[in-house]
Image 1 (cartoon, rainbow, N blue to C red):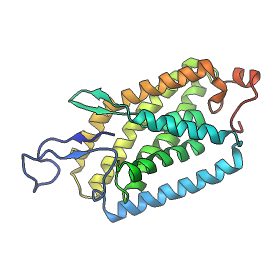
Image 2: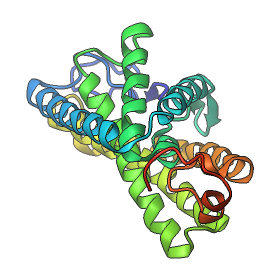
Image 3: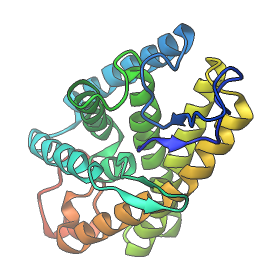
Length: 250
């Protein structure tokens, strides 16, 4: 997520009042302390290892090309920024979208690859903080977004487009906000910025960014539902009945 401006001089007591510190979901190196880095790395590695095992056991071979296409699409879509109030901008994270297309396990692997490429090749987020960035933006968004989407979709109607739209919009928006909350907590625990400042700035901005996330995710999922519903993870039953091309075990 593009760097977001905090109020002048609020990051630390010692900085100059003419300095405008910046912070974002892509946490740079040096912003998190060793315990936070260690915990987030361990959680991320554990979930990635579990996801690899589940994908190998449950997914059909033809899901692999879709994983590559999904990763490329999300990576490209993240390069497109949209303006939000206050003179800054945001871009798609894509965790809920990956979960809707691939499920939580394959989707989490796709998001992990996207953030590794961003961190290593484009220096978008620090290398030491990559575990935290993957956890905040990839794993929370994919796992949390998928299961919230699934819950809402089944409550409204598994095979109804309205259920998919409502579920996707809520899950996509909330995944961004929750990621911002975790990022703010990590920064506060690390002593980088006071808790109330981190929470108000991060969550405040990402409430707006989450709206853009929801709109893009809903538009993409709606288009796929209408044109190739069999590509969705847990496709609507009408798609399964008319097409043998489901990508994973249901």
